[in-house]
Length: 425
Image 1 (tube, one colour):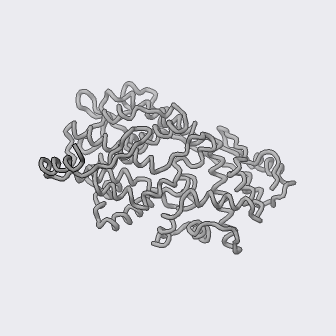
Image 2 (cartoon, helix red, strand yellow):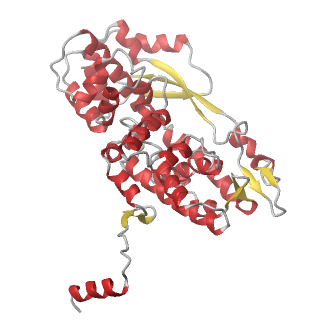
Image 3 (cartoon, rainbow, N blue to C red):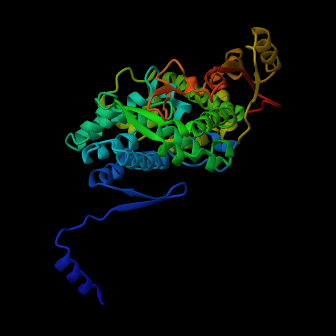
C-alpha cells in the first residue's frame, strides 16, 4: 500500500483533519506532548527559546560536572507534570475546561521567563528590588500582546487573580510542580540521589476541595520525603559552598566591571546587551521596552565571553576575578554556625596586604555573609491533607509528623570568603 493510497483512505474515512501533536523527548519523563497550537507557538517564540541558554543551576557545574541542564528543559518538565496533574484531577471529578487546561500549561511553561544569566546567581545584579517572578509577568505580558491576548487566562492564573486558586497553587506553592521537577531533574544531572522524589505518587494524591489544592492522607509519607529532599538538596547542592563561592565571585566581577564601564571607555569586546546593563549605574528602575529588549537578548554566553576577555583586562581586580571563575581557581569559603567577626575579616585582609591589590580591592576579595534553608513554612498557606473521613488537616498537625517542625525550622549558616594560596595576577 503506497502513501497516496493511505492518504486517500484517511480523506475518505477520516474527514475531520487531526492536528499533528509535537512530541519532545525528555531524559526524565520520556515523551512530552505539546497539546495545542498556541502552546507550540509559545515554545517556538524567541522569548521562550532564550531559556535554552540560561543555566538551570548557575555555576553548580563547577562542583557537579553533569549539571549543564537549562531552564528550557525544566520548563518543559514542569509542563509535563501539569499535564499529569490536570489528568489526575479531572479523573477525580474536578471540572477543568479545555481553555483552563491550556492556560494552566502555559502559566507553568512560562513561570521562569524572568531568569537572567546563570539563573539566581545574577538576579540581584540585574533586577535589584524586583524578583524574577515579577519580570516573568512583564515578559508574559509581552507574549500576550504578541498573541493578541490569548494568554490572558494564563496570566490571571500565574498572578493568582483567577478564582480557582488551586490552579495557581500547582504553579507556586509549598508542594508545587515547579519544585517537583527541579528536585528530580537536578538530582538526575548532579547525581545527588537525595533529591529523587516520587513525583508521580504526590500528583496521584492531589485533589481539590473548595478550589484549594489538597493531598489525600495516604500520601503523607511521600510529602515528608519531598520536604526532606528539598532540605538536603539545598545544603548539598544549591548552597554547596564551592558553587556559592563561584556565584558570589561572579556578582563581584560584574559589579567591578560596572564600576569600570562607568568611568572609562573600554576596548574589551563584549556583547551589546551586556554593555547596556554595565553602562547603567544600577539596574533599571522601570523596565521600558529598551531594557526588556536587551534583557531578552542577554544570556549565559554573553557573560562567559566577557569573563574570557576580561582575563587579560588592565584592571588587576577584574582580571583576577575573571580568571578565578574561568580557570576554577576559586576562593576559600569557610562555614560556621556563628557570624564571623570583624577580627576574622582583618586577619584575612592582612594576609593580602603585601599583594598587588589596593586596600579597597582587598575589601572586595575578603567578605562575609550568611545563607539560610527552610523546607516548609508553617506560617504560609500550609500543606493540607484530606483525611479518610473527608476532613482537612494541616500537614504539620498530622499524628505521623511529630518531627515536622524540624522541616519548618529555619537553618542558617555563616560564611567567610577569601582568596587562597598565592595571589598573582
